[in-house]
Image (cartoon, rainbow, N blue to C red; front, side, top):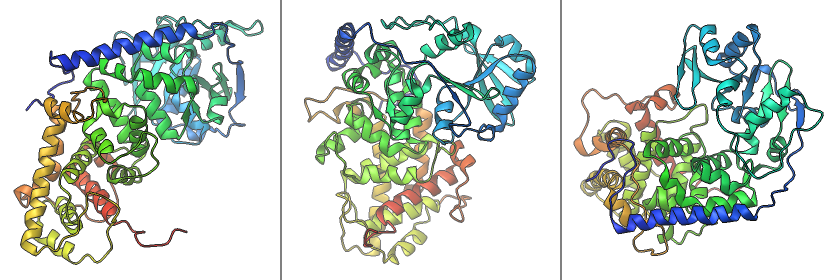
Length: 507
């Protein structure tokens, strides 16, 4: 077994992987050629300013810790702006995952302004300001100016009627990834500065890069995954050039280290847009690389790249999405366990009561007597559309045996998901699929996920107290509390197998 024990890129020097890496380089070469075909005389977006009130933004929408930092810097005479995705989310009336600040103050001046503040990062340093147990990130125009402005081959020039402050802000926005993230908001003048056409793209529900997409993704292949995540979360579409470049350069994400891949996958699956993320990863060929075991499931059941249908895997994550949100995420051990549970059930279909008893056993810490007793009394109709469910007539002993077998299968699936050879063989029957033996789940996360279901195999855990009531403690869920993760996992599984609206007419 080859479990990932850290975050360095995992690879073995065998021929198939070299094929995969050659595909990365070939994709990049093709993309560079595509850049040369882009009209270098492309007109830049018109520079615009918007009144934040007209866009429906008020200061009350800004989180208190962020307001404290903004006010602290403003009171010292520095200019301060909210930048990036938080401005986009405010325009969309969504709760930002976090708020990023940029200021004219140097980082040392930021640190002197706040008592609980430290400078982090070497290559691109920023400040972490601690307010009310929250961390607010602050960057400086002075350090961001160290980063070279990309030569995008576009005729971006400063309009004759703009001042130096506009030009300074514009140069910073030019370094960002997508037009909808290239916005700056001054909460004191109540102005939103848009130099990249971001507001128009928000109104068009479009994700597109600043400058040529191929160039942008070659410069930083993590932008491919960020594009997927943003489009999934917002329900946006991609601009034509951006979509084509994502597809052509999908293999380049292999250049990312495993820690970064885990972070990006967690953003996609733990914050309320998991189903949409999985659909987009599949559509653009990224699922084959990142989660080949799950990609093989899609292929095996004839799921097309643009398929609108659902299946059990997507239904499980759809139910997870109903319980979490950008400001109420779950711990990564929850979605890893869901992936393993589905893999186990896909490999060996089970009776719905087996799945029900299993989920109840997970919830109560392995008390199978109680779980079986409750399961036997279920009279609700299960969802009969899933291939993974097969109704059979099981007596109590056989039911218990299969529940334990399912728990063992989940453990086996977790092991396979963290074994390079097993991952590499997932798509072996599909010769056109890209080769991938990528394992980004570290040992600590693997062990934490194992604990979620092991109580069903090992028996009732001494001292474990099952969660009472249906209310979710999101602070505990985000921290990975075993009780909370088990509660939410069991709820997702049960509600997927026995949906409340089964048999009801659509209204």
